[in-house]
Amino acid sequence: MAILLHIKPTPLETARAFADFWLEEMKNQQESQFSVALSGGSTPKLLFQVIAEDYGSRFDWSRLHLFWGDERCVPHAHPESNYGMTQEMLLSRLPDIRAGQVHAINCTDQPELEADRYDQLLRDFLPEFEGWPRLDLVILGLGEDGHTASLFPDRPDLWQSEQATAAVQHPESGQSRITLTLPTINHADVVAFLVTGEAKARRVADIINSEGDFRTFPAAQVQPRSGQVHWFLDEAAASLL
Ligand code: 6PG
Image (cartoon, rainbow, N blue to C red; front, top):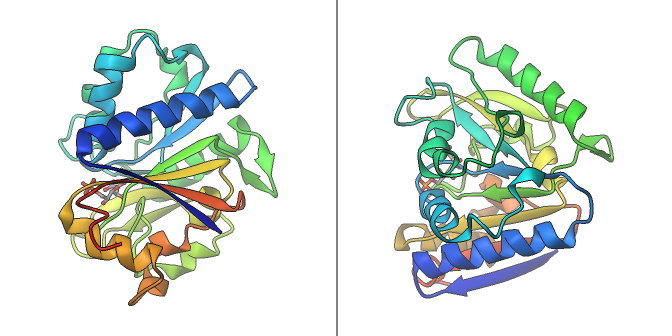
């Protein structure tokens, strides 16, 4: 598998490089609809801010369909909601995105049922590739424990799941979450990590250099069927490569 590194000096330059990459991928893809699964947590905030402030007129927002790689099972108004963060940092600042283009996960009640609903939504909405819903782009973050989306090291069963999504619990907080499973991520057309900060450097090096306990890290299992995975890193996160 080809690991394509995109290393920039600062988080801001990394975010800009990612926005340019996203634009390029949309231009390269000929179909009208472009589906993206967004990452959550704090890292994408800068990307969304850069896009909202400087790329608003450059994206053809009418083509985009937004999904999430994972969601915390809290109300969308809750500070930990990935949808809520995206709404605040991006969607609220882009009037051209219609509600029908935004496919939020809402799992405050009965996460298992919401996982099933989202699984079916992905399968109904997206083209199929080798039996899996095919997203055009999956944006991934990286946890210091090597998790990505909400695929945590304690759930290797989700690496071979037959489901496109799963309801899980955060291994420390117990918080319920919905996540794409690994096969769904690996069947996306393009998969790109966006990781910044010194705190991630050890894990980034373990995974990219296949060092340490890398085999136990869900992020190291991201091996897209396309044969390549992109890593957008600032110099701090790349400092141990
Ligand atoms: C989430 C994520 C998760 C995140 C990493 C990194 O919902 O938390 O999708 O996989 O990308 O935990 O989080 P930070 O960007 O906050 O470091």
